[in-house]
Amino acid sequence: MNNYYEVVVTLSLCSETAADILAAILAPIGFESFVADETGVTAYIREADWDRQAIDNVLAEFPLPDVTATISRADLIPGQDWNSEWEKNYFKPIVVDDKCVIHSSFHVDYPTAQYDIVIDPKMAFGTGHHATTSLILEQLLSMDFDDRTSVLDMGTGTGILAILTAMKGAGHVAGIEIDEAAYQNALENVALNNVPSVKLYHGDASLLTEVTANHPVDLFIANINRNVITADIDRYAATMRPGATMLLSGFYEEDIPVVAEAADRVELTVTGHSVKDRWTCLRLVKQ
Image 1: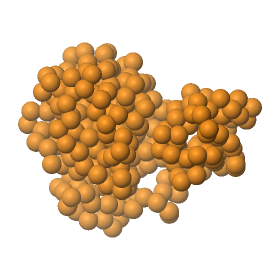
Image 2: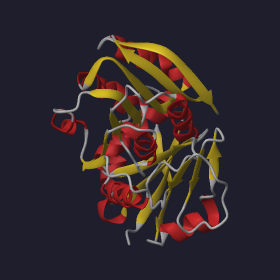
Image 3: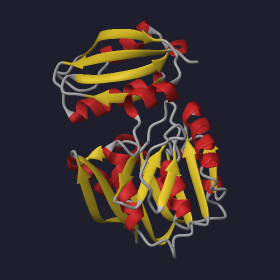
Image 4: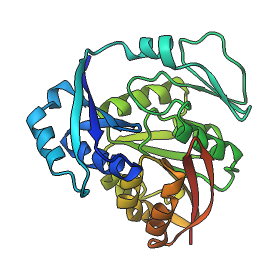
């Protein structure tokens, strides 16, 4: 099992913009996940990728004036049975909008609902507990899938969003995931839920043209982060039919103008949004 370093990086002037930039400069050197707080960011990197000098060099070149970024703590976390950890400490069955229940195969006492999704999480994001995932789940549950036969879930994580769209009737669902561990976890979850219409791909936005060549997208979903979304939104839009819907999350409500401006440049129009704990789900349509 993989060992990870948990690295706490303190920002001298912490803001959402500074935290976003910090995540953006750490990701290319191997950091896989980030949790922001009022003082900075806690980031996670595999032990095999750990290089303190390289990290310090990147932090020394922090691009915002008057902001410094320093490592205040770096702890090695031994590899562990993540399913067991989730069962003991985190992952409890949840119900979304009284229509969808999400639970693990190790749960024996959970409510019933129209859509029953089994998720056995490893280190992948997306169990429905985080506000961004539940916001998109709520949107999907409210949508009619009669005319949404082709779905693309960018950054699919555990595969939970792709699985729900298949259960709701989407005939062709593709999920793309850059992280190898998350991709393998999504494959397991798709098998657990018996949704063969979901096809998963390991990679990034460079796969979009190939994956959607025979299936122009009716519904595009991306729950990633603001910087990745604004960088790749032109690739996202190129896969979509005119009139297709896009659901975006992974950023705060105050970031909507930045995302909306990038979307407008590729003829995507904002039609609404929902909010939970400051996180937002933005709904757009392709002109």
